[in-house]
Length: 338
Image 1 (cartoon, rainbow, N blue to C red):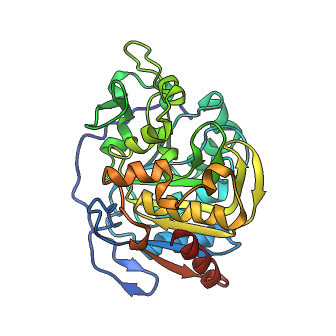
Image 2 (tube, rainbow, N blue to C red):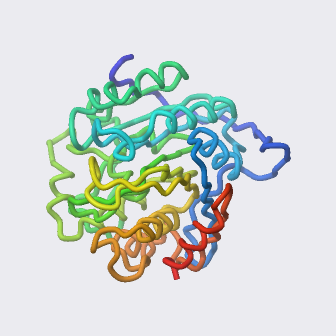
């Protein structure tokens, strides 16, 4: 596979609607958009399962697949390093998402990626990403190889970024943006890395024009967790799928102490999804930083909520449990969100 292809995505195409979900017929315009109205509620599905592929498909079907038929989809996975799940997206999760999108009629699927710990192309090759994408007709974009035209600059108001940041153009121009993240702690200042932190890999490390190092700025900042949240002002989330069959409750992002929550989590609001993720880590006992204070006071979550990236209050999360044992898991999550 060619290491990087920048596909022309400027043309827009009217989307036909795929209304099939399980045995029912749904109406609507597609995956629900993230809750920018902070006084609304948002749904997070918690699927208790030991079958990753079935769990991922069930999560995607719960939110509906309308609007996928004929659409260009950008997929943000988690390949920060060449370490196995839960450090990186499990190959079965990636394959299940791509296959479900293909079955729903996606016109194209693009996976742009940038690894923070290692050469991106080598990481993806080691993790089998190229093979999976080739088998299912998805395109891999190595963000390290993009020139200035491959990025879109963003300078959000009220941001702590000194000169904004550069978002990879495929995410900007896709009809649908889906991400899949892992459930883990982050020992290098993020405290945890879930859907908000995962999109750090959607922005440039270096400015192609002058070599400015955005990651040096991020990791040296005392407001690192706020900077992470602020990327959410530019990144769409039409659907988030968090693979929580295993998790790191300490260490991370590449290695750590493993536990086995046995869940697939899905939603459209990164604040809500990450709040649920933090609650799950707390049920197992986790780092001092992640245990401290309320879930809503975690800096990533608090800052994202302040900016309207997602809900303002965990009480506005509508938790839906599916699968054997889900009721107990949901009850534990609610207790930690209270």
